[in-house]
Image 1 (tube, one colour):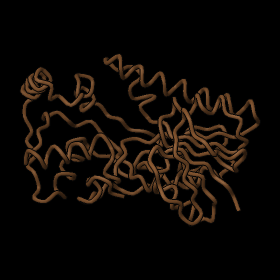
Image 2 (tube, rainbow, N blue to C red):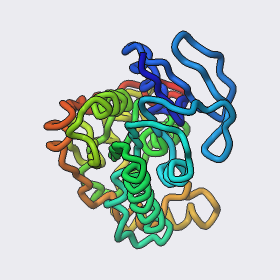
Image 3 (cartoon, helix red, strand yellow):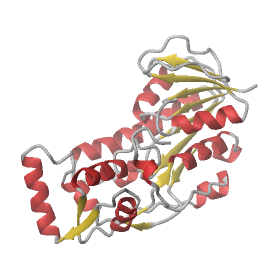
Amino acid sequence: MLDALVFGGSGQVGAPLLERLRDAGWRVFAVSRGRHADLPGVQWLQGDLERCDGLPRAVDAIFSCGPLDHFARWYAASAIEAPRVLAFGSTSVEAKRDSADPHERDLAQRLREGERRVFAAAAARSAQATLLRPTLVYGAGRDLTLTRIASLARRWGRFVLPRDARGLRQPVHVDDLACAAMAAQAAPSAHGRAYDLPGGETLPYREMVARTLAVLQPPPRLLQVPPPVFAAALLGARAVGRGGGFGAAALARMREDLVFDVAPAQDDLGYAPRPFQPTAAMFAAGAG
């Protein structure tokens, strides 16, 4: 029996990963801040990357489904023996590298440094590390993009976009990410590599939003307004504390293509993500 240590086991990617590990016969030590009852093949440990009692001394693989920078610090200081390490990061490492927003540039820098530290720590202990970079994640009702859009649209009965929100996106389902992690841990070709994990369909931002709204009941209206009108409305919303953290950089990105190459993950991992065919359940709290 193979043993795995999973950080973020109750998260939107960690939960489907646990299912696949259990189905494959792994014994899993899963870490979460909340309390969870043990399941056959899964022992829950309450804690986080700052403190967690009862961690095993050795496992066959470590999976990190939480913040990469926090995991990188923990892993660099950890004494747990594990020949395989798989950690989720984000394509924001590239997409936000040159953002006009200093907070977004800081995020990209932390992701780059996290990747560097994971690879360096793995090399120092003769382990094999793989980094997985999802694009826009959906499917568990816990993401901060499409689920938030769905929530706002349900509340208002409509959702407003600028008419030039045509930047291309590749939304990726959480189950496809879990499958990619399972494939990566078993693939020697993935050792020492970082893979972008886009979804199986590339579509304009406004089409992605339109499909999301179309599955809600009743379907909220999608209103497209001139960009100056949208920018002015956003400025007003931020002035009264209702901008939801949506800044000028995020607005500009609606017009930008954020498209990533799926071929390396296809070739090495057999990665075959699904097209974007949402259902209302995917945007309900705690879905998955």
